[in-house]
Image (cartoon, rainbow, N blue to C red; front, top):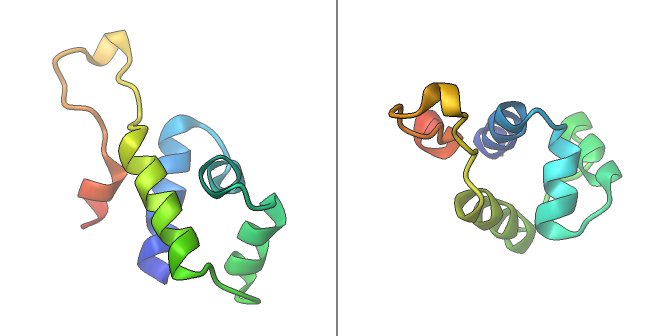
Length: 80
């Protein structure tokens, strides 16, 4: 579970958004879900976690023009 949370944090950080925003966009769950997961008061279902991972894979972090020629940042690859 912690690995999943790290992936979402890294992805959100690379986009400059909060992890709760990623969770809302990816799985259409309330932002409060992330807070509960962080506090250890719950965890995502496998289906929800899969939706979030799929969303991150299908929506990679864009590469800024100043980093053209540098491979796109992929938090899933880096955390593996």
